[in-house]
Image (cartoon, rainbow, N blue to C red):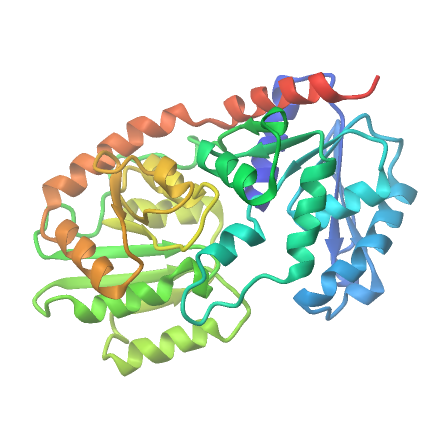
Length: 372
């Protein structure tokens, strides 16, 4: 989500010289607190609340009133419009500025997550479901990434058609693009492939499926996997332990989160980028990988069905089982020409998704709703 906010903000400021923006986020450590002038017309303020230090995920809703009060106290002037991201920020926006038009982007929803819970995945709490329902009732507009997400908002939360505005996220083509002289590790080689997973390692994102799938592949195939991302939980340790148990310790690497340029380079060197999530409102990783010219294997769910053009820029896997993923991986590993064709098509298609296009749609929405 941070990528979405940062890139859309930069594009908004670029295309609209009258726009001024104040961004507020929560600092859970006093050393993170402070204000940064992001742009001559935009500031980013990290607000520190002592009670946020060491707070558990389930405690975060209790911090909303204090955060909302701090925003009102520090904001340079009352806003004409508020755009909140994720449910907790939406609650804070309603508390801080109940009379100001609210544009809200869910990014993920409790209902969608709970509808596809896999083995070992915890359901989202009732407080989140109720809060998201309240946001749908009170928001002037709900920005969704795809038509599929719009349908979810109607079906799960009863959103009105007039509230829903579909705005696809973009990709920074100055960073995520093919590079001359940089090619996949096993380009053109039948029977070998380097896989990359990028994102927060957690059960719903599915990297454990990849580890189990690698164990099911024929032993003559030379397949390696990099899992890129940091969760701060025991999940990563469990992944590493499982890889060792399966004798895959030399084929599976767990790497920390990377900067965008480093991630783009990792995508270029990958033969296949994987997105085995149980739920995604869009799947920006899939689009960024495509922009780098790398084929994508993704779950056939939610927004991934729009981020990946099945059979054109990648392949969608209908079942979230190790066996299904092993079959899909083997298909691409054994067909380097298909990998090349999918990757080239993905790089072309990525040009349809830019942050400037995203920002233009958001500006039109803001102008239609903002108070004088």
